[in-house]
Length: 144
Image 1 (cartoon, one colour):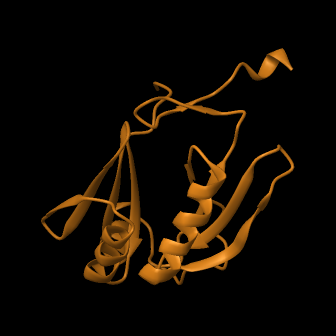
Image 2 (cartoon, one colour):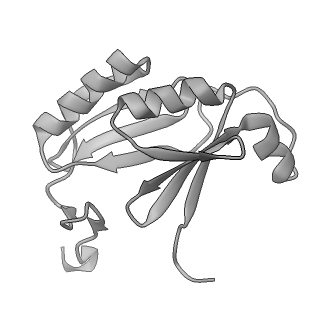
């Protein structure tokens, strides 16, 4: 298996509500067959019915746990962008779960959940570069 992630599909209870939320954050997607596709750098973030996603994965749709063990991350170029995005999240109907603050790694980050409870971190990490297209560039972590 190649070391690559192609799609992240978020199961949502109300597709129109979820699309409005991400659109309000400035994302632009395409809707096809009751699914919304957002190009997000080299991957796609997809919104699809939670029940349909569970069935398609051979799983039972159960209530969302308080924490499911996965957090999506959006790295940005500045501390100010972290604050601006978290303000946009609240205005769009999301909930900030951890206000932006200094991090143990010398960065600045905060967290939120979307209307379906999917957790996101918004972070400025000066140790992780961002290419011109926004792609994350990991440093050589063995050097330090």
